[in-house]
Every structure is written in structure tokens, then in C-alpha cells.
Length: 189
View: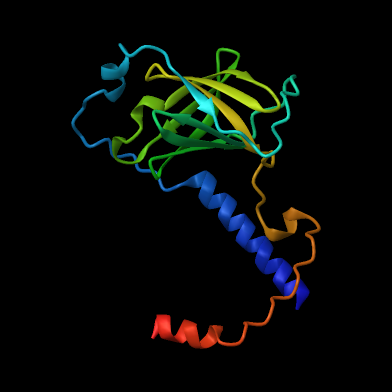
């Protein structure tokens, strides 16, 4: 039973990571030929406040690597940047832009595609700096965002549940409390 739970948990983890990284982007730019970044080029540079992470007790400094889950605030909106291997995704306004990490003149660059042209001001970014707990990215729309590390990510996506290694035991599910089944039936009909 525990082995089945472990494999189910591993499969769910692989699926969740794959969905998070791959997103559901679209190559449709609306067909109007308009360059969304050109309108924003005259905007002044702004920096987003990083979202604090649970382990933020000071910056450890040093080159920590780009893979991870990073969060920032910009214009009152939360940005979540996820990098695993050479895959990258940026979640903003409930939209997922997906793409790749590329070498851009000796620096890491982010090249993303966004669904329906949403978020075009953050489709090409250059990593200005990366440390243990902070990441600074300069975007094509003129913004420079400073992200706080939310969590680490694997260097590459697992291909199968066996690639996850030994997983911790999953505890047995608790019994449903008395009366909860009746309430659930009332809600679901």
C-alpha cells in the first residue's frame, strides 16, 4: 500500500513540475503586428520588491545558480519565475509565459512566449545578478525585477518516478470524521 502511495505521489510530483515548467503558452500574438515592447520602451526603469521567502535570514552571497522558484511584486502583481535546467516559466496575472534560458553574451538570458500577447514586456530578459536568495532580471519592456528565492528546483526535470530517488513514506490517510460524510453528501447532492 505504501509503495503504491509513494509511486502515486511521485507521479503527481512529476506531473506538477512538468505542468509548472511547460505551462500552456500560445504562439498567437493576435496577428496585429504591433510590437508591445515598443510602447513601453519609454517607461523608466523600475524595480520590484522581492517576496520574502521562509528562509530569508540574509543573503548568503556567491553564485548560487539560476534553477529555482523565484517570486517578486511588480505593479501590485505577483510574479513567479521558475527555472529548471534550461526551461523557464513566468506566471503573472494567472497567465503562464514559457521558454528557455539562453546564453546572451556571456550572461544568462530568458526568452519566453506568452499566451495571447499578455505580458509581452517580460518576454526577453537578461540575468543581471544571481545569488543564494536574490535574482535580478532586466526585461525588454524596461523593467528590472528583483526576485526572492522561494525554493530550490532540480537541475533538470525527472523523466520518470524512478528518477526521483527514495521518497519519504506517506502516512496513511486519516479516517473521515463522523458526520463529515453526511455533510459532503449534502453539498454534492
